[in-house]
Image (cartoon, rainbow, N blue to C red; front, top):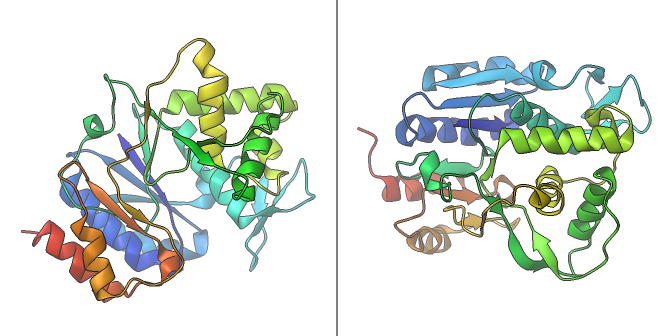
Length: 288
């Protein structure tokens, strides 16, 4: 198992908490790869003392892409327009890191995830296989961005358009992928587009790496090797962009079940860091 975390300076403290939770609760020998912009590398380098492997986005981004200084955009030598926005570039970096992993599975865990109990890859597997997170009928007409991501994924994979609603959601925290499935999806994008997969994705204005993986697994791979599915990543998540106060935070964490191994409290929520740390520590107990 390899844990992959894209991060950047504003999330440094959260990422440090995540790295320490990986060191405390993950199996010995688990690789935790933290990928940050070159300008932030020195800030994150101390996390190597926590067991993380800090890498620059420049090392992971596929060849032919250049980051524009002082701007959160990249340019592709093969398709310089439109520029690749930072949000899309981050997803390309995740896909590139996962596709190149030699692990049996990769766990995509953003900086605002924290592990709270001992865990192993077996906690995610179903019958020894990496499952697909699939929440049936979760995407409705009231989620236009999700519908756009689904449409883009289908086009990139050469699948017919489908305007049926509701449809499944494949977005979760953390996200567990089979690297071989990631490679298969990217190879399919290359065959469909006739260009390197990163160039094809970089041209898009709307894209979700998790939706691409899910649509590929369900509508392409399933014909030859159906994947088991799950709706439980053992990680209660708070994704609203509002801060949790003390009682709300305590109530959120009180709902953890014995099977839950992590929590996600969105960095965009603005929840007070000290309060978050104290509440999570109350769940995990002292690190001794």
